Image (cartoon, rainbow, N blue to C red; front, side, top):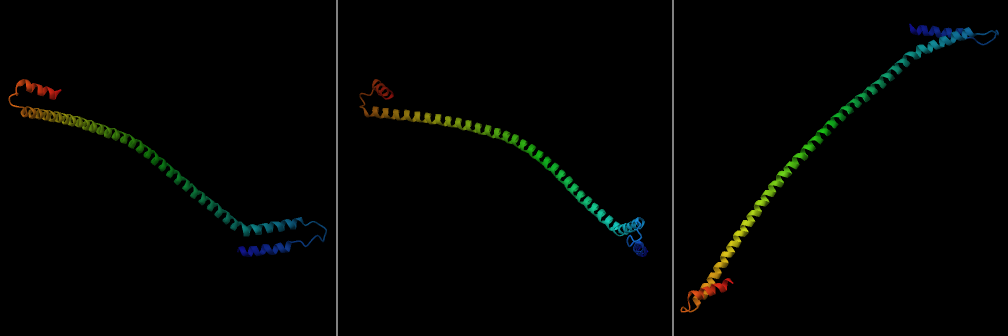
Length: 171
């Protein structure tokens, strides 16, 4: 039906078109009718595809905008998650620092106690070695004195001679 109407409008446009200004009058009415018919024809042929094109274009732009908005929302949520992870990591680092300081103090105290115990053991060991050396020295002195006394003649072996020998060794 629309094709028949279109054909009639095209024929009428050709029929009503003026051929020029032969009669010397104005043909404004015919030109206006021709313009309106041409505009109507163009509107009829172009309006629907143009509407479809622009609506599809608008929908495409809206879809792209929605995709960008979704990506923006996703990146915002990822940023929030990253910030929470960073704050958790900072808290963990602070706790780790505090714990390591406590462990360091405990280990340092244990090492100091062990060093003090080792030092006391060394002092006691040194004292026992000194005592042992003193006893050894006394023993060698006594042996030397006895050897001297025994090597002297038996008749001059009295208490005064023994005291003199001991005094000589001690001095």
